[in-house]
Image (cartoon, rainbow, N blue to C red):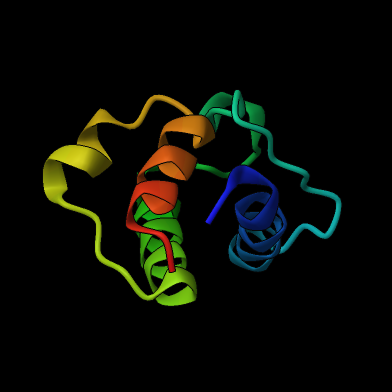
Length: 80
């Protein structure tokens, strides 16, 4: 799975989780770029991404993510 396949799916997940159809994420998107992305919504987001891609993040991966690009890299490595 490559970035071009992952980003559209992530956009849908982000739009659903944050209830904002205008969200468009890129590899450089961070929590500071999206209103309401707090610790609670982060947990909801991680769960939704895991469900969408049929995978589970490791705790160290979740705590180490600095931007959406790092999330994309993990998803691409596991490819589904």
